Amino acid sequence: MENQNLTAADALEKLKEGNKRYLNSLTNPGNISQAIRHETCENGQKPYAVVITCSDSRVIPEGVFSAGIGELFVIRVAGNVIGAIQLGSVEYAVEHLGSPLVVVMGHTHCGAVGAAMNSEPEGFVKSITDAIRKAIGNEKNELTACKMNVKRSVNIIKTNLKTLSAEGKMTVVGAVYDIDSGTVDFLD
Image 1 (cartoon, one colour):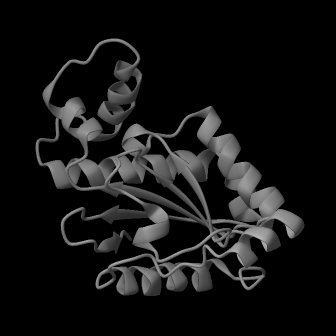
Image 2 (tube, rainbow, N blue to C red):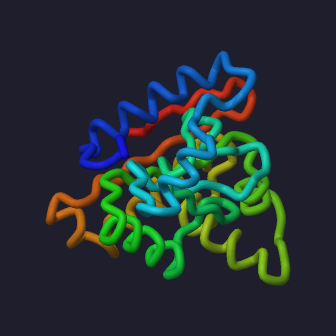
């Protein structure tokens, strides 16, 4: 499979090129053929990147990056917040599948970020908004809050899985997807 042995820099470039293709696409050009289904069934997956993103139905990582079956290891959770389960999933993808790049991708018009900024949710949703509030404090600009939330999630991954970074097995970056334009802005 062509995804094996990509560096984190190569994987990031592949994501950026895929996003450029996506901006003018009417369908996903990623390989979803019977052949790739059979290949990944028989030989396993070798995703070149891990993408942690929101559960929002308007955010489709495989589409956004023009990726097919076996290319991305996607972890979805409202507000792209990071907890033990997400960390375990990242650890698995890096250690066992060899994914060198981890992308935390927030998005514009995020309901979870908006809820953290403008309401007091109850029930289990509160655990999500509480995590986001830790990132954004009293921020009132939605885009700034989104970026702050992404950066906190990036830092949680880097802090908790620092051995993987130190060993050169993982690079972690943040990004924001604009649900209107389709553009992904990678953060510094």
